[in-house]
Length: 88
Image 1 (cartoon, rainbow, N blue to C red):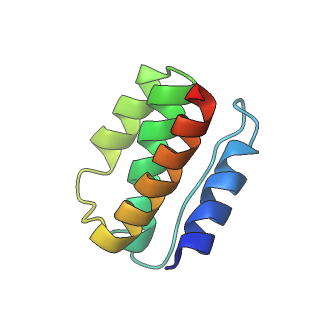
Image 2 (cartoon, one colour; image 1 turned 90 degrees about the horizontal axis):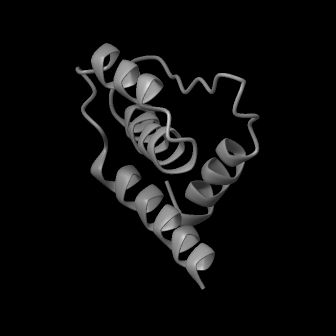
């Protein structure tokens, strides 16, 4: 994954209507897509929508995720950049 892909993922996630589910998947779903799911769960459900029920359900149902640290870092950097833009 590169920075541009992280940006596209965050762009896509932010354009999904809050009343629609966002599903992230791949064959195994525990490394790269797991990192995407974890980061988006935290950002969308905790930061944007304050949806503790969905946030906790994701954690409970996906305890086995072993997120790819590179993917996680790129996504967190993109989200951090956006939060800083919101503040300024």
